[in-house]
Structures are given as structure tokens and as C-alpha cells.
Image 1 (cartoon, rainbow, N blue to C red):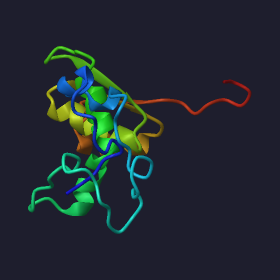
Image 2: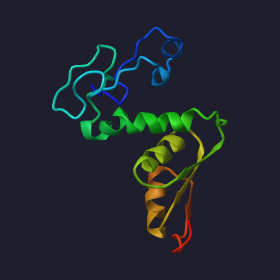
Image 3: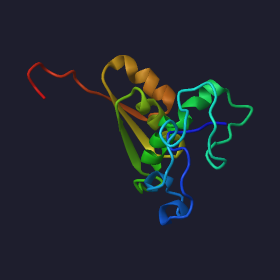
Image 4: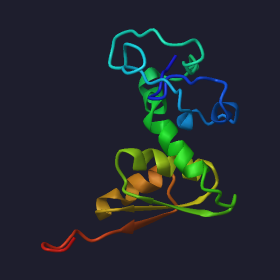
Length: 141
């Protein structure tokens, strides 16, 4: 089982009934609404945990607890057409997940990063294109 940053909701407001617990004013947050978060074990509301299939290694599943959900929603919610194009700025941290989600969802995926050494990584993650951005010049924002 996994628990994300949003560890439950009130379950009865309009946001909750629409499946949008992130905006529930009564949402619960581990470590804030109840003890836990960065712990060896945690007690959470029964409707909070997400099942992790036995075949999925816990290390591989870990990003889905928080960062993965955030990134997945950012990729799927903007309303892009099924054959649309998605650009991911930054190929590190959440960018790694965003490229994979966008490619698997069928979008033409463009990874934008810094350094030609990231081309192979971008392609391995599913990007169709890679744009290398130049480093910032001193004195420029």
C-alpha cells in the first residue's frame, strides 16, 4: 500500500464527489492531519492507501505516492487532444516521470533539457524529440 501527500478527504463535498480530493477543504495530509508521513509505519484513514500490485517493486512504485500523481495529473488534465503534443521542460526529477507519462498516453513528447548527454535518456524515457537549451549567460535572468 502507498499513501500520497493527500492522505484522504472528507468524501462528501462537491470536489470529493467529483474525484478531485486535491481541492477538498477537508482533505487530510499525513503528518498534519494525523501523525506520520516520514515514518517506518503509519496509521491512515481506510480510504487513503493505494494498492501496489505484488508484481511491482516498492522502489519502482515509490514515485506514484506523491510526485507521480502530481505529474500524471499535470500531463492528463490540460485537455490536449489524443494526438496532441506535450513539451516537458526539465529532464530531471518530475520531468523524468512527465516524459514517460506523456509518451505512454500517446502524445508526441518533446523533452527540453540542458546538455546533449541527455538525448539518450530522453529517448529511453519515450520522448520523440529532444531540445537542448543553452546554459544561462552570466548577468541574464
